[in-house]
Every structure is written in C-alpha cells, then in structure tokens.
Amino acid sequence: MEEFQSLFESVMPQLVEYGLKVVGAIFVLVVGWIVAGWLSKKVQRQCESSETIDDTLTPLLAKVTKILGLTVVVIFVLNMVGIQTASLVAVLGAAGLAAGLAWQGTLSDIAAGVMLLVMRPFNVGDSIEVDGTSGTVEEIGVVMTKVNTFDNVAIVMPNSNVWGSNIKNMSANDKRRIDLVIGFGYDDDIDHAIETIKNILDNEDRILEEPEPKVAVSELGGSSVNLMVRPWAKQEDFWSLKYDLIKRIKERFDEEGISFPYPSKDVYLHKEES
Image (tube, rainbow, N blue to C red):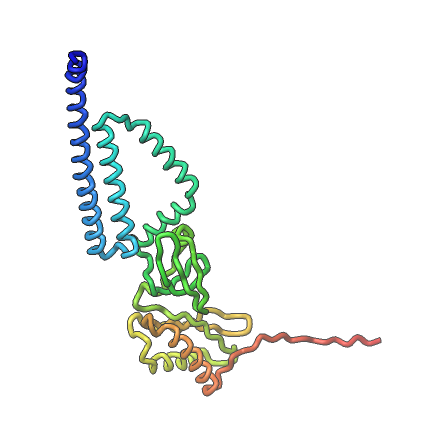
C-alpha cells in the first residue's frame, strides 16, 4: 500500500503538469479555431468590398487564410504538449514539395489565374485576342479561362498560357480607330478622291470629331494610289461603321467615276518570220 502511495505521489505531479498542458492545448486550439475563422471572414469581407478582386477569388483566399491559420495553431499546440514538430514540419515540407512537383502545371495555372483575377487585364464580356485566338470572354476561372470565338466556338485556355502571352483587349477603351486602305487608279484625280471620302465622313454621325479623322495618300502601289482613311468611333459602333464606310465609299466612287483598279499585266507577242 505504501509502495502504491509513493508511486502515486511521484507520478501525480507529472499527471497534473501534463493535464494542465492538455487543457491549455485544448484552450489554445479552440481559441485558434475561432481566430482562424474570424480571419477568414475578415479576408472575405475585405475581398468582397474590393473592386480589384474577383468574386471567384474571394472564397479561395478566405479558405487559404483559414487553413494557414489552423496549421500554425496545430503546430503550436503540438509543441505545447511536448511533441516534437521539427520532423513533422520536415515531412509536411517534403510532401508539399512532392505535391508541387506533381501538380506543377496546375499550380502554375492557379497562380496565373490569381494574377488575372487581381490585375484584371480583361473582364467577362470583353473582346480579346490572346496568342492568336480572338473572341469574347465567357468565364475567368482559377485554373482556366473560357473564350467564345466570334464564330461561336468555345475555347478553354489554361491560365498560364493566357497570362504568359500578349493580351489585346479590344473592349478596354471607349473609342477605337478604324483603319481603311482605299485604292484608286492612277488616271483619277487624287484631290477628287480625297474630297469624296471626306464628304462621306462628314455626313456620318457615328464618327467622332475628336480625334479628327485623317485621309491622306499612304502609298503609290503597283497598280493603284492608296489612301489611308482613319476615322474614330465609339467602341460599340466600330464594326458596323467600318462595314458601312467600305460600302459607301465603293458606291460614291462609282457615282463619281473614280475607278478601282484591277490587277493586270500587259502581254506582248512577237511573231518570228520563218
């Protein structure tokens, strides 16, 4: 009995000490869980109020914040109860490295997706051209971006390809310049052709006064004199105005007797006497 009592007296302080550590660890774990949840909600509210962070990215950032917070809390709690975490951290680091190598392409797409959602080089509904592909943006995801081409073909592009290419956003500015090259014959009067085109531009309400439209001789071609025609229009009027101008210039040139030259060759035949 005395031996049991002495054993109990020797073990009791250790049990009390370890019990206090466990209770403290549980308390820290609960508090850490609450703090991690609070930080997650805080990040989510900040992202939702920000104009630069996309709604698609908000839940991802909130979840990552909570996971990182809980990871720190768990490591701290394990240290409190006397468990060595150095080897655990090393194992987690090795596992993270292996997963990173295995998912290298996907992680690259995710990183590029985050940059696209934060930097916003284009938005859903914009007309863009990326790496030779033109179309309207339908969806900007964390991993992939979906674009519908102008002939309504759906194309899904990895975000790393999008972010790593030159991005041409044709919807970013509220006005665009129309570039036309109009050729006419060498026998026609240059000033007459220029004034005819200027008259068409002056009578078109969709053409902006500022910047001022430009009409000038750009090239003396092999079979035609080429005029550079550059009016400015609102973004929404660009394509319809471009097509209408081409049609009207052709009709007015026909009315004014200004010719559109055809590619031609002169062939000379020489008959040899026998």
